[in-house]
Length: 214
Image (cartoon, rainbow, N blue to C red; front, top):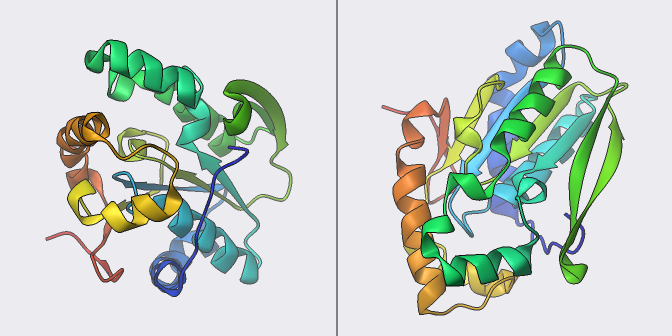
């Protein structure tokens, strides 16, 4: 997404290094592009961790592409917020073209050379598209709230922080107005995404340590 604001800290880099070390055997033995999903609630650090993961993989000569779920929303951000405020029932998985993101991951795994994906231009509140080359790519990271629900994923990572624990991160990002309505949206998202947590191969805890689920 053009116009997104990422603040990558040492904790994100530390978690990324732990993830890479855990999956290195699978990466080295994979006969095709390897896919990773990083899910979590708003402000949990999934975008930052996804970018830090890409950097850690690139340093090890695994060329990495990051796909942001935010590019796959049905409507651009400001329009989507207006629709939510008219009908809070719109909040949830149906806001996102998860089927398209999953199809792109399927194409990635099947050896496609390119994908044509949506691209959100945040400041202009519009959705464009871009053609992305997969030549030389070894890993694709899909990051976003609901990415644990995707099927075409080799490793699922879930950042185990709730929206109540991520307030400071959300304030720093300053993407959305922090009002009572947003808190209602985040509560709905929390209820949905909590059901996805059990699909995770790895959890990132509040200290950004990577652990295996119990």
